[in-house]
Length: 98
Image (cartoon, rainbow, N blue to C red):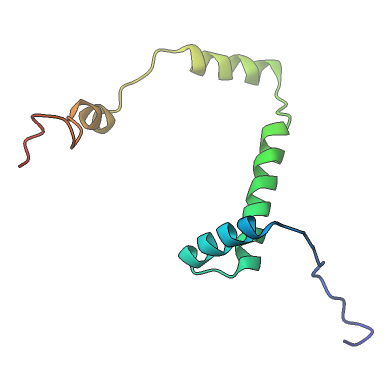
């Protein structure tokens, strides 16, 4: 590595029980990923979720009033969704199959 090259990776080390490693390795294998890639992706995803949950949303009084008006308005049915919800589930009797 030259003096002008800066490595952007930072090592992260953990001590995990064998059962956790086996679980992670099995899941990573099912996804076709390495252990490192699988754990990194899971950790980043979890961090993003926490940050999204704790984020503060700011808006003007007018914006908030418009937001509340949309939430308070009656729901508009979406025809394709209504159709799907009216169909019997595949495991229910009378589903038209078999």
